[in-house]
Image (cartoon, rainbow, N blue to C red; front, side, top):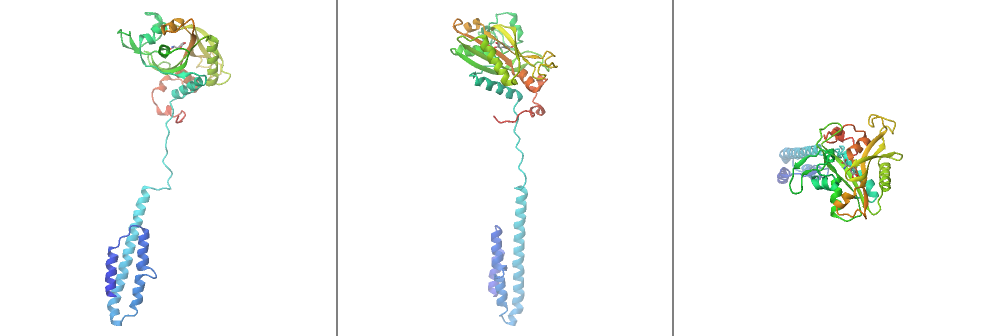
Length: 344
Ligand code: DAH
């Protein structure tokens, strides 16, 4: 028995449990009701009284040693479990996943694009750095004509082969690029950023965004233009929004007009935004001047067309009642967070 105890003692000393199952089988093997220690105590009953004196102590010490080992392993296993749990508590609520919000100008641009796409318009883009030809000359702005002063231009380079290089002052330059590059019919809208040398204030900015529209085909009339824009306004601002066209002047259209809509803020009653007129101007438009068509190698006897250009900021102001243009470019998270957080 003495020998067995020595053997078991070294087995217990060397024992290491990796998990609760291993520890449990250790407990059953040594400390269980049918375990080794129980058996040893049974056997102890049968030994001589003399042997009992020596063995009794050895056996008790062995039992205590086995129990202590079990207790120590159990505690270390529990503390490992605890520390693991404190790092990863699966019962805690998940961490919030915040979606960014779409910029209001992007939301409105998307809406505008979608309405025109349904009418069969393509979407095109052009460069923000333009030459004089595409931004002015091809669009029938005569050289040294005061019409060029309508738009305060940021010039990058004066003179040169292609004339002045500048930041485009309007998206009408993309019309020219489109007509030069293809053959009619054209039916497209051209969204983009434009630049003007203006002091920044609540009502003006040195850059803003426009959407240009162009439709060139045989027999396109001013009635087509009116109908298209009327439909556009009903879609964007809601059924019942009124429109009116006022004669205007642009070098690249003849006749030219500006289009007003009934003020979407006061519904035409009169408010600060519409300067108590009940109307707000949202775009310029007209029939493409034959000179512009000829500049782009399009037969102006065969083809006619209309064009229009609107400012996205202005429309966004109306839709969301934003009074200060600067908010669009200041990246103030408190402002931006208020818009739709949709992943599109
Ligand atoms: N380009 C003009 C502007 O920036 C807007 C405009 C007016 C565009 C009439 C057009 C148009 O295409 O036909 O103010």
